[in-house]
Length: 93
Image (cartoon, rainbow, N blue to C red):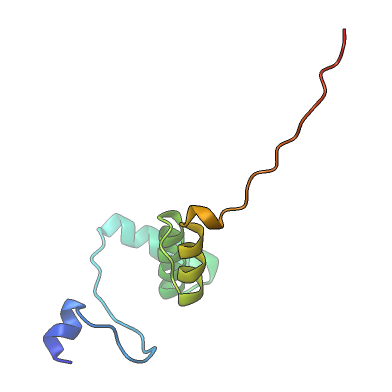
């Protein structure tokens, strides 16, 4: 794997070592995130992990292999459980 390929994101790392990227924030966003980290007692990395996990969940993107397999099964209509129908008797007036 070349350095350029690793930077461009063309290949996946073979191990679970963390991938580092630089992200630019506006000054007011940075101050708000820093304040939240101080108030909650969490590191900025923990806040970022939580935010990205929530974003992926919102967009229905699996994070791990298990979630990916579960989600792929749900995408096939034949595997969906039929919804139970409730038949109610009409009341006579």
